[in-house]
Length: 169
Image (cartoon, rainbow, N blue to C red; front, side, top):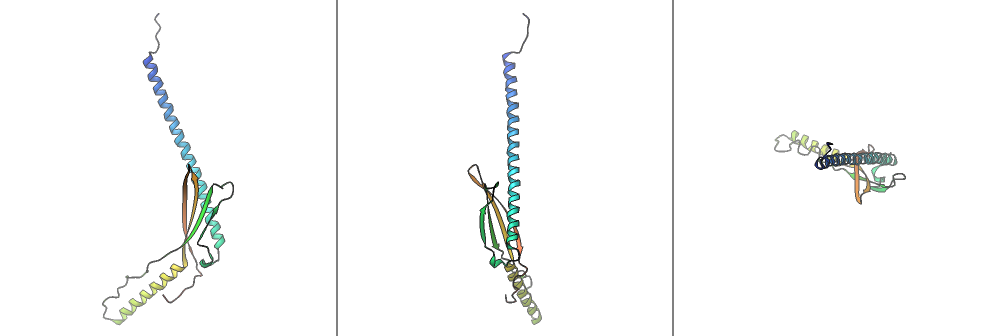
Protein backbone atom coordinates (compact mmCIF):
# COMPACT_ATOMS: atom_id res chain seq x y z
CA UNK A 1 0.00 0.00 0.00
CA UNK A 2 1.23 3.32 -0.98
CA UNK A 3 -1.20 5.67 0.87
CA UNK A 4 0.29 8.61 2.58
CA UNK A 5 -1.19 10.46 5.59
CA UNK A 6 -0.15 12.76 8.37
CA UNK A 7 2.32 11.54 10.92
CA UNK A 8 1.54 11.64 14.61
CA UNK A 9 3.98 14.54 15.08
CA UNK A 10 2.32 16.65 12.37
CA UNK A 11 -1.10 16.00 13.90
CA UNK A 12 0.10 17.00 17.38
CA UNK A 13 1.64 20.25 16.08
CA UNK A 14 -1.55 21.11 14.20
CA UNK A 15 -3.61 20.46 17.34
CA UNK A 16 -1.28 22.65 19.45
CA UNK A 17 -1.57 25.52 16.96
CA UNK A 18 -5.37 25.17 16.90
CA UNK A 19 -5.59 25.17 20.71
CA UNK A 20 -3.30 28.22 20.91
CA UNK A 21 -5.39 30.15 18.35
CA UNK A 22 -8.71 29.29 20.04
CA UNK A 23 -7.31 30.22 23.47
CA UNK A 24 -6.13 33.58 22.10
CA UNK A 25 -9.54 34.24 20.57
CA UNK A 26 -11.28 33.42 23.86
CA UNK A 27 -8.93 35.70 25.83
CA UNK A 28 -9.54 38.60 23.45
CA UNK A 29 -13.29 38.02 23.60
CA UNK A 30 -13.20 37.88 27.41
CA UNK A 31 -11.24 41.16 27.59
CA UNK A 32 -13.72 42.72 25.18
CA UNK A 33 -16.67 41.66 27.35
CA UNK A 34 -14.93 43.03 30.47
CA UNK A 35 -14.30 46.36 28.74
CA UNK A 36 -17.92 46.46 27.60
CA UNK A 37 -19.18 45.81 31.15
CA UNK A 38 -16.87 48.50 32.57
CA UNK A 39 -18.00 51.02 29.95
CA UNK A 40 -21.65 50.21 30.66
CA UNK A 41 -21.14 50.61 34.42
CA UNK A 42 -19.25 53.91 34.02
CA UNK A 43 -22.02 55.20 31.76
CA UNK A 44 -24.60 54.37 34.45
CA UNK A 45 -22.41 55.89 37.19
CA UNK A 46 -21.87 59.11 35.22
CA UNK A 47 -25.62 59.39 34.60
CA UNK A 48 -26.39 58.79 38.30
CA UNK A 49 -23.75 61.35 39.35
CA UNK A 50 -25.25 63.94 37.03
CA UNK A 51 -28.72 63.15 38.37
CA UNK A 52 -27.60 63.50 42.03
CA UNK A 53 -25.88 66.81 41.27
CA UNK A 54 -28.96 68.16 39.45
CA UNK A 55 -31.22 67.13 42.35
CA UNK A 56 -28.90 68.92 44.78
CA UNK A 57 -29.00 72.07 42.68
CA UNK A 58 -32.80 72.01 42.57
CA UNK A 59 -33.02 71.31 46.31
CA UNK A 60 -30.80 74.24 47.26
CA UNK A 61 -31.78 76.78 44.64
CA UNK A 62 -32.30 80.18 46.23
CA UNK A 63 -31.23 79.07 49.73
CA UNK A 64 -28.25 80.49 51.60
CA UNK A 65 -25.45 78.09 52.51
CA UNK A 66 -26.47 78.24 56.19
CA UNK A 67 -29.68 76.33 55.36
CA UNK A 68 -27.92 73.64 53.33
CA UNK A 69 -26.93 70.41 55.14
CA UNK A 70 -23.19 69.80 54.81
CA UNK A 71 -23.54 66.01 54.28
CA UNK A 72 -26.28 63.82 52.94
CA UNK A 73 -26.39 60.27 51.58
CA UNK A 74 -28.81 57.66 50.33
CA UNK A 75 -29.50 54.95 47.77
CA UNK A 76 -30.86 55.27 44.27
CA UNK A 77 -34.28 53.84 43.45
CA UNK A 78 -34.90 50.81 41.22
CA UNK A 79 -33.43 49.75 38.86
CA UNK A 80 -30.27 51.31 40.37
CA UNK A 81 -30.66 50.09 43.95
CA UNK A 82 -27.13 48.60 43.81
CA UNK A 83 -25.73 52.15 43.81
CA UNK A 84 -25.45 54.55 46.75
CA UNK A 85 -24.77 58.28 46.67
CA UNK A 86 -23.23 60.77 49.04
CA UNK A 87 -23.06 64.55 48.86
CA UNK A 88 -20.68 66.79 50.77
CA UNK A 89 -20.57 70.57 50.72
CA UNK A 90 -17.18 71.97 51.69
CA UNK A 91 -16.09 75.48 52.49
CA UNK A 92 -13.41 76.85 50.20
CA UNK A 93 -10.57 78.72 51.87
CA UNK A 94 -9.03 81.34 49.63
CA UNK A 95 -5.55 82.69 50.30
CA UNK A 96 -5.16 86.45 50.73
CA UNK A 97 -5.60 87.54 47.13
CA UNK A 98 -3.24 90.50 47.34
CA UNK A 99 -1.08 89.36 50.24
CA UNK A 100 2.52 90.26 49.51
CA UNK A 101 1.73 91.46 45.98
CA UNK A 102 2.30 95.07 46.93
CA UNK A 103 5.29 95.74 49.10
CA UNK A 104 4.58 97.58 52.29
CA UNK A 105 8.27 97.74 53.01
CA UNK A 106 10.57 100.65 53.46
CA UNK A 107 8.74 103.31 51.52
CA UNK A 108 9.59 106.77 52.72
CA UNK A 109 6.43 108.28 51.32
CA UNK A 110 3.28 108.07 53.40
CA UNK A 111 1.14 107.91 50.24
CA UNK A 112 2.77 104.68 49.11
CA UNK A 113 2.31 103.11 52.55
CA UNK A 114 -1.36 104.15 52.57
CA UNK A 115 -1.89 102.62 49.12
CA UNK A 116 -0.24 99.43 50.24
CA UNK A 117 -2.37 99.27 53.37
CA UNK A 118 -5.52 99.95 51.34
CA UNK A 119 -4.66 97.24 48.81
CA UNK A 120 -3.95 94.76 51.61
CA UNK A 121 -7.28 95.63 53.27
CA UNK A 122 -9.16 95.20 49.96
CA UNK A 123 -7.47 91.85 49.44
CA UNK A 124 -8.58 90.67 52.89
CA UNK A 125 -12.16 91.87 52.28
CA UNK A 126 -12.38 90.06 48.93
CA UNK A 127 -10.79 86.91 50.36
CA UNK A 128 -13.26 86.92 53.26
CA UNK A 129 -16.22 87.47 50.90
CA UNK A 130 -15.20 84.72 48.48
CA UNK A 131 -14.56 82.27 51.32
CA UNK A 132 -18.13 82.84 52.53
CA UNK A 133 -19.75 82.93 49.06
CA UNK A 134 -18.15 79.87 47.37
CA UNK A 135 -18.66 76.19 48.23
CA UNK A 136 -17.35 73.01 46.67
CA UNK A 137 -20.00 70.34 46.18
CA UNK A 138 -18.77 66.75 45.87
CA UNK A 139 -21.13 63.96 44.79
CA UNK A 140 -19.86 60.40 45.19
CA UNK A 141 -21.56 57.34 43.70
CA UNK A 142 -20.47 54.00 45.16
CA UNK A 143 -21.23 50.35 44.47
CA UNK A 144 -19.96 46.86 45.27
CA UNK A 145 -18.08 44.81 42.70
CA UNK A 146 -16.60 41.40 43.48
CA UNK A 147 -16.84 42.12 47.21
CA UNK A 148 -14.86 45.36 46.94
CA UNK A 149 -16.29 48.85 47.24
CA UNK A 150 -15.93 51.04 44.15
CA UNK A 151 -16.67 54.77 43.92
CA UNK A 152 -16.78 57.66 41.47
CA UNK A 153 -16.78 61.31 42.57
CA UNK A 154 -17.55 64.55 40.75
CA UNK A 155 -17.33 68.07 42.10
CA UNK A 156 -18.46 71.53 41.19
CA UNK A 157 -18.46 74.95 42.80
CA UNK A 158 -21.52 76.89 43.87
CA UNK A 159 -21.56 80.64 44.40
CA UNK A 160 -24.06 82.38 46.65
CA UNK A 161 -24.42 85.74 44.95
CA UNK A 162 -26.61 86.95 47.80
CA UNK A 163 -23.88 86.35 50.37
CA UNK A 164 -23.38 89.14 52.88
CA UNK A 165 -20.58 91.50 51.86
CA UNK A 166 -18.83 92.63 55.05
CA UNK A 167 -16.46 95.59 54.84
CA UNK A 168 -14.66 94.58 58.04
CA UNK A 169 -11.97 92.00 57.24
